Length: 387
Image (cartoon, rainbow, N blue to C red; front, top):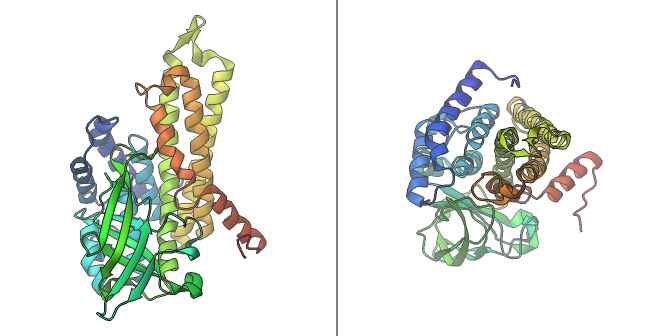
């Protein structure tokens, strides 16, 4: 496969492949997952430079291109996608830190994030708020003590076994201002008034990942932990989501390729009606759909990554990739289950887990329908969400 990769790009990808085969392959279907294992793997990924790939070298990052970043994520996901969150969240939230945080905040948190010493999560979604970020109900008010006081709840903050160390959290300072009143904060989990509950009954969370509900009861945040200025919270989160959408697309392509690999192997061995089922026309036709859609998704992924590298950012390209790759992932993993027959539903084979891990991708970081609306608005100039 060639997508205009340079020798340097291919070197990154090759290192990621070797690591995945050596360290991640044995952990596929791990019956005893733990936060300690996840953090240990994350530390190893950090030592190779992958955790802070896209972040500036001055903070310990690699300053890598988006193409290189996506290549690494795809390579890891083709073997085991259970540990990508540690990488994606640092590059997502780290991008917001670089753009909006004060020099003091960047110095305090970025080196530790990039080194794998602490792991972040994003706290945006609420029980009554999803895609409509301007409707955030969590409030932030400046107290007489000079600190911010935050009250509300956040949902679906994912990280290793539900335990992150810091959170990129957004809250509303003035509801009359809509999204212009939103502020972003860097919150440590031991700040007073912070409580989190592990939510472990959600499909699509791998064995090492769990979502967290945050309960913020007069959470006290020092003023220096405000990210940028009041009113920049929406932009800060958007800058994180752009990388998040590319990350999801890369993860989807890697898992699609693994689904193809597993299915080819299965249909070459499984016999029915006296011959391998891979000889049947309908099986080959469904497999051809899987392969072609995976290649199309891969092409769009690297076009998007390359466009961002060349232009410094293009939100629509990230939306194209996230939308298409996540939808393809649903079809490819579903076809993989179908071609495995009853075994596709068994934990003995990996394809059911692949479908489950991909089911969230059309929802998180902007649902497929939200991506459709963003793309449609870009094309027509009409905002379908305008009240």
